[in-house]
Image 1 (tube, one colour):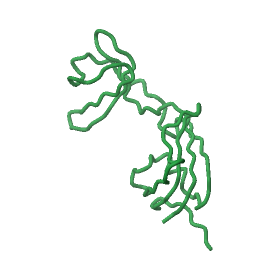
Image 2 (image 1 turned 180 degrees about the vertical axis):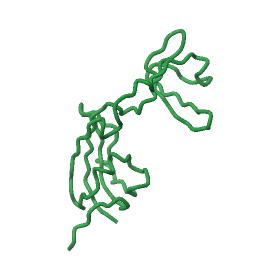
Image 3 (image 1 turned 90 degrees about the vertical axis):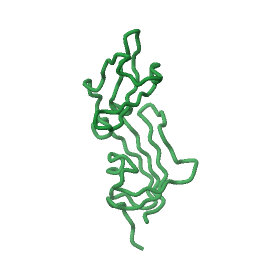
Image 4 (image 1 turned 180 degrees about the horizontal axis):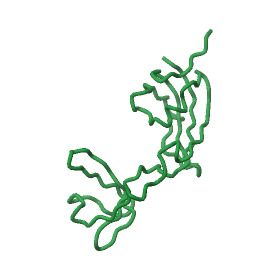
Length: 144
C-alpha cells in the first residue's frame, strides 16, 4: 500500500488545533468531528497549508510558527487614532471590541479598539494573531 501525502490541491480530513505559545486555544476540532478542507482554496490560512505539504495520512504533527512565518509582526502604521466622526454610527467602541469599516472601493476590513478617550479611539488593523508564536497541531485522518 502506498502512503498518501498532502499536496497543494489535496482534499484532506484532519483534526487540527491552533494555540499561542502560552497555550491559549484559538480553534480546535479535537473533541468533535474532523474537518474536511480543500488545500489551496483559502479554507485554511496559507501558513498552515504550508506546514501540511508532504504530511502523510495517519501522521500526528505539531508545528511551531514564529510571527514572521505566521501572521507577521505588528505594523505600527496599521495602528491609527481615529476621531469618533470616522467611526461608523452605532458601533461599539469599547476597548477590545472589533470595528468594521469599508474603504472607498467598498472593501470591508476590521480593527480592534486598543484605547478609547473623549476624542476618539485607537484602532489596531493588524491581524489579531500578528506578533504571536503559534502552535499548529494536526492529526491527518485521510487524503481524498
